[in-house]
Length: 292
Image (cartoon, rainbow, N blue to C red):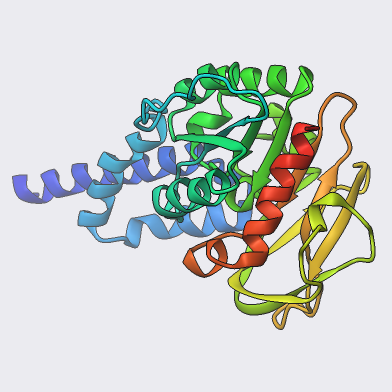
């Protein structure tokens, strides 16, 4: 056997075990049929793929690094002004453009809100101590770690307001954090998109004040599954989803013994953040959760 053949067989074998290691790290054993299919087919994969997989498998083990902060601070406290901390950052959304810039303009335009933004988990945990309301849209892994989660729960335990928006109602972090159970009452795993109506369920609530019943919005149509054991009230839901033929919660409040929590599934991009109904709901949610 030539040295070149021996070398390629050795590299192929190393690649095979790298694929095996990668799938184990990704917990593919939870889906045994998929795992066996991939494992048995690994020997037939191109050598270049096996080598690339070997080098990329280490991505799973990389430490979670927080996103860059903004350094924004609240203005000196004024009577009658709410301090609102906007927290975003992560994937699949333009957090800077919409959850920072657009929502900050919407809230500050009320004249009674001082809103600042960060995408850094440590900075967010620090600023929470000064805020009256948190508006959370982030889905970055750093926000699922203990420093931020502990600060969030302490913030809520102190009676401050929590508003969870769009990407924040996704199932972003491990169940062990308790985030989805306490602050969402469930979670979202899929969505459609398009123009759809949002209809009120008949419940009277401050979140719906000034909001037209049946307003239309161009947005991602989130499909939240709310836990049967959660104490919550759905205030508005989508029209029938053309893909699932179901209506999905769009706006709801989660009952909590220590704080007020409002959830808004709407808000993917410009069409949503520029929609007057979305803007009114966001303002209402901030005011209601603050208890002011």
